[in-house]
Image 1 (cartoon, rainbow, N blue to C red):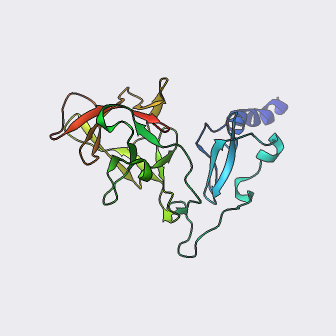
Image 2 (image 1 turned 135 degrees about the vertical axis):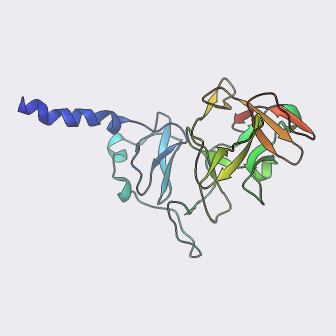
Image 3 (image 1 turned 90 degrees about the vertical axis):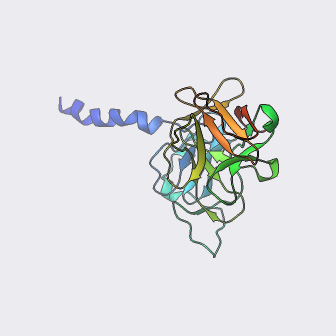
Length: 224
């Protein structure tokens, strides 16, 4: 009986220890308490002291992946103009897929943050955003400056079309990708977006329509 009581807590911890992070998700970093290994075909890659990500590639031998997060070798360089922190980390380069519009006259445009506000908009390929995450979506800046991992949030609105914004604090955690085109949707099934002239973007949850020149579209993970 004593033998069983000692083993039981250890067995209970096994599911957490064996869990693997999905493709493109976080797999390490200072203060990270989640999975340290990735699903097959992806390898946990250090991007900065606070963020490691599952990127395409071959997994190293198992013994080399079970390493305490705080002792991973850091190979990226940092800028003297800013200090890395959990909310302001230096990104070495763009990683993670973009998200592209599939339909209407906005087809081929890309999800990104407006330069002058926190609004999520559709814009050109050259200024496209790169996103990571599962459940929540976070924007990666590729300009080589100290930035935030901004969350893609659905903002409250009385109309059925809901504004989208990239914000420092996450409030929307039910994003997912479904179907053969890996289209962006919420867990409650909303997968249609409204795009208007100037790039304004909304999630459509009903039949209300914004004024102006607008079209409906789906958003796809990856390039158009």
